[in-house]
Structures are given as structure tokens and as C-alpha cells.
Length: 159
Image (cartoon, rainbow, N blue to C red; front, side, top):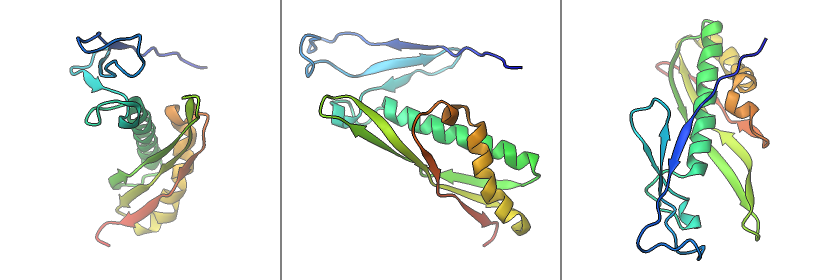
């Protein structure tokens, strides 16, 4: 049995005084994203290389962070199912975006560099292997058409 859930986002962009939508180089990429039932809006732009404002989030950042965050939550879930006490989880995720000369592009690879600290040394190998199980459960990973690799490391508290 499957269930459907609906997620909603509102995107708001407005032509500024210096903008022109008839010239692809002369319009602001800055916009606001409001997620249904969330308190704060996100200030979003294009990535700097696409004439966006570097200090703002961009869609590529948000895709990568969604993937890394979803994997972490799936990983913590499978660890809890296996009675592994996770004390800390860090991921320095990377994504490779390939852009064609036409301006079209796609992500070709994501690497999750997870560092997990657990309490019990006897569970280290199991904790490491559970990244594969977490990847199978991750909603975002299951929606991607590019490879997601894991360079996971498991450390023991106090070592």
C-alpha cells in the first residue's frame, strides 16, 4: 500500500527597476521561496556562475542539502532500528553539475562524505553498512537520476 503526500512551495519574483526580461543578462535572479506552513521565507538566487547573488541560497545548494539531509534522517532511522546510538553526524556533501555549451545541464554525481560518531565500538561495521540501507529509503535519493556515492566514516566516542 502506498500513500501520497503533497508538498507546496510559493516562488515570488518581481521585475526590478534595473531589470529587463528581454535581455537574458539583465534581470535579477533573486527571488523568495515560501514553503507551506513554514515561518520563514528563503531568499534564493542563481549560483554565482549563473549571475546570481553568491550570498543567497541557490537551487543547486538546496538540492544537495535536501539529499544530504534526507540521507542523514534515513540513516538515523535505520541506526535506531538496529539499536545503534549515534552521537554525532556530519556530512560535507559535494555535487558535480555538468553544464553544456547550450546552457542546459544536469547533476552527474553526488558524493556524501558522512562522518558518524557512535557509542559502541562493536557496532562500527554495522553502522558503516547501514548507509546503503539508508540510501534505499531516502525519498530524495530515490527521486534522482544520477549516482550517489558514500565515503562514510564511523568513529567511536572518545577515540
